[in-house]
Length: 217
Image (tube, rainbow, N blue to C red; front, side, top):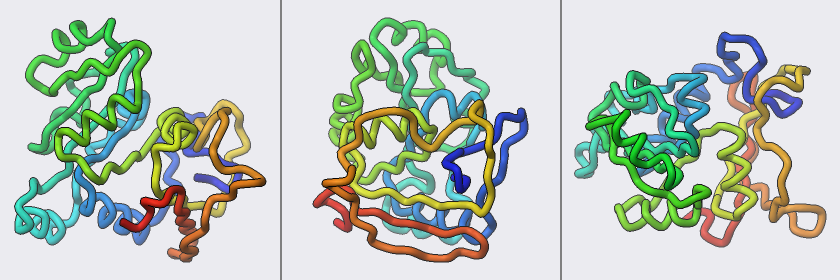
């Protein structure tokens, strides 16, 4: 995020907050996860591929007996996701779309064979989603965004670790997407999150926080 807590600016073009060394670090973190989750808004705005970039890391995953790329996961309340998005068209890994009950059939009709559609309740229930992921063998989930997904996972106490990279710039525009939005978070003046690591990576800084007793497992 920027110094003032934004994930992007308000322009049509994506604002690159990180650098090559940190992109490689993120690739390494992805390679150690079973699945990567982004919100539907992130798919619409950023069109991410969510693939492992490094051939060495891809080969190491295959050698461990797992697919070269983690499972891709998204959450939608409206079902309004383009089947041509790179989330669906790139990579051979399973694509899971968790939908509000009322739009699950619509999503199945729209996405066809591009993804597995799962009814996540009405409204969408993150507890239900994480339980379903666990039943599917997902033990390490990486939540990459956007701000509304971050807010929901953090306010519900579902995140064990927070990796926050701060870029040396300000966005200064309240129209831009934030790292988190309003909510009641478990960590406050009387219950501070545990700072586990501070690391400079070129011109950005990584802050790692342990949020639950499961951190580090």
